[in-house]
Length: 336
Length: 104
Image (cartoon, rainbow over all chains, first blue to last red; front, side):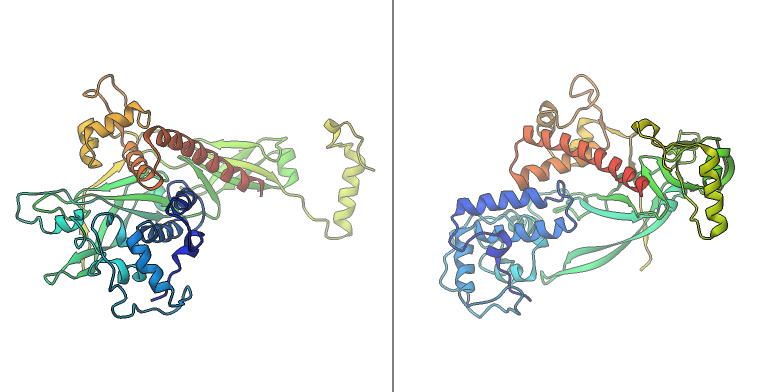
């Protein structure tokens, strides 16, 4: 496992005060919070910062970590905790929350995780430690809800699709060790789903304690980026390139839609940027008969390249005969 | 291992929760949810708590609110403000994404 420099992660000096550490944490937490941030690897950053703060905010853990760090480890360097590294520290209890420690690194786990003097259950009455013993003691609690994301193609959202979702589920064996077990579920994604929508799978979350019911699993649906279409709610946008003569004279064209190609009339005198609507050709509603979305075509007039003398002659003839000044609204004359 | 079949509930715009159902679904005391309504984090339809109907999307709103409170140390009024701004930013980002693609 790699050594982690928690001071570097939080961007604070080694002799930072607890207040400075707290301020640095709040600032980084705001920057990388997965609910707020749009940074690409926000979630990984957020976890890293949370882990660093978990150690540095607690004077006891911080002292133990500082002691270890004096050994001259570099970030990323191969690391194994030296035997007895935590000897000589006293643990007064309280402070360790155990919250979300599951997402922390092996480095953290080996130093401060379960089994270490800092681990849950060893200091005061950590809630998690208490829960594990609560089996037959007349205490029951509903299992935690789990959250996951699932990405589907736009075509799948249009037609509906059944997807197999594989989850890593932690399980505790008879010896008290934690293993992850794969758990597969067939999830039918109904038609009419929109981006960001959640699906609830009852009873597929963590098991309850002391006979409590299982938590639920929430899946958030995301659409994979599509090479042709943009989606807004149930409406679908497509940029439609057309030739200048199709724009000027009008045309009947085939255009792709999620349900297959359809024939479409471009009105004469069309311009770049103009929007045309194909009613009811977007993502469908939830039930047959529900109003679905529309498909919008945004016209984009493409200029044919003048590849040879004949092409150039055609353009020159147009320039002479058509008396067109595209910049009339700017109050300047036509080109020569 | 064969995949198992399971009951699926779409949390879409047609689904609503009562206070009790929402409280059970997000494992949070009704009093905490009432406080969220009072601060404007949630805006159920209906006059009194027993008539309240929450859109299913509020479930995620509650989860986000709890995370913001826990991780960033903001109070409920701050959460309400943050959520409003996040909604607005999300709408703007979606709009910008579409417009950018159309300008290419």
